[in-house]
Length: 89
Image (cartoon, rainbow, N blue to C red; front, top):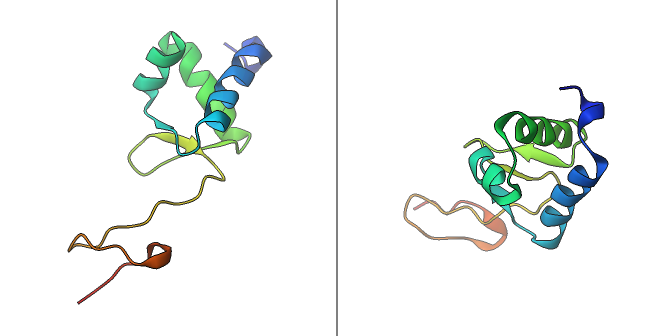
């Protein structure tokens, strides 16, 4: 299914969900359920939005806004530092 077959309305719907919910991070499976899409169409929508640099694929395979702020990182001891820097002892 070429990119042209992905309806602009569907792309805009997915984009609007990510814009309306800052920090939204979904796996492909979660995205399929949320938007009631079949495997192929969901994969194509997510791929198109990654290629457009609207979404990014995270290290665990989830999809999130490309320009979303990074979350504070937790150190091995469970403490967070200001700005998300890792605290070492």
